Image 1: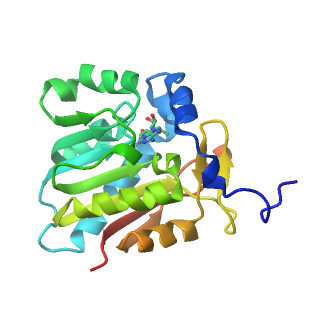
Image 2: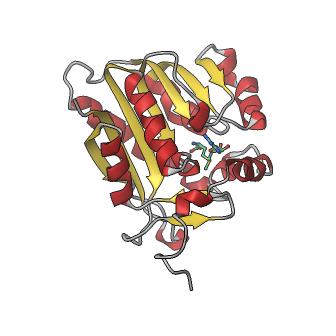
Length: 234
Ligand SMILES: C[S@@+](CC[C@H](N)C(=O)[O-])C[C@H]1O[C@@H](n2cnc3c(N)ncnc32)[C@H](O)[C@@H]1O
């Protein structure tokens, strides 16, 4: 039985090379991106779209105006860009470390239509934004970063936001409130909601709105998925 007092911090076990090896073995399909649960994609995308609309309505100057430049971080094959971001944004940049997923995006319709902006084939821990963004979307990928890397990354994102820009994190959370959990399949850490809040605060971010994604079939027994919309605290 693991002893939380003597075990190393779960995030210290993250090995980004092992993660890349895992993801390189996964098919470049929605099913691959969602661990065999492609059927939840539509519900997820609808939930994200509704969440973003609610957050943008909090600021009368953004409201329902089109978003100029967004970035889909840990984008995989561009499931979120295709199903949601490209509908509300003029240009979507991509950050994704796995070449074969990026190739799928490059071959896709959105790339041909000029909706995809710059593509960065790199992990978030090594990515520094060079544009100013109205929206930085991070979904199901910040679990690949250690706590320290995540704080540093969030600070870089915070510094790249436009005046009304939003940083969104949408992630699995640990239903056990007391500790993070290391998963050796893809070498990730599932964090508690409390840990996310600590890391956001450490990065100088405040939560504008937070919401649990509802509507996934109960029989799938998925972990709770939570979205946070963040802005610089000062
Ligand atoms: C569960 S998939 C989610 C993909 C996409 N966000 C979605 O929701 O469809 C996780 C993605 O994170 C990517 N990834 C792995 N290590 C990463 C890292 N260090 N930085 C950014 N993304 C990473 C994987 O290659 C994969 O595309």
